[in-house]
Length: 193
Image (cartoon, rainbow, N blue to C red):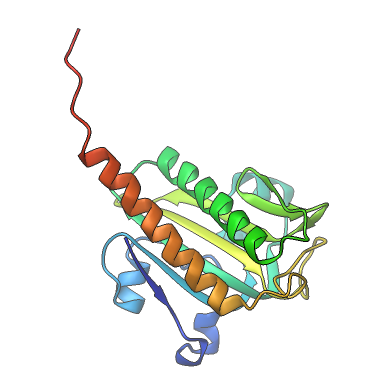
């Protein structure tokens, strides 16, 4: 798995906005020249219209998903199932929580499924979905608390610089996925019966 940080200065304003259309196969390759299993990241606003939402729960509840500034991560994994995608999504949330606790140990963060909270303040959003060719994950963290429809926690509250944090999380995540795959290569098959 490879990762790439996208400098916001290289993005047009419309490209920096995460609106859900980016959650599609080959996005990293066609827009950022990163082929194969990958994770890309950038900072930008978030505003997902209902027609781009893939979470049925949010659609039923007509929940707005938006924020003025977020770290966005998009993962694409080929040859995997949606169940693997959801498990990977939760692994990423756990790894994110671990790294945040290393850097901001005075905050009591909790993980509920694929989201991170401090009390009732929500730090992250996330979704996993599947295309005909790959599993896709969007995971994002609030950089600021502005423009959100629910009580939020932000990296700013934790005194965490977002770009360095995101790059380290992406690096660790790729290493973890590579180690998971290596672990599958060294196991002998079991005999039948």
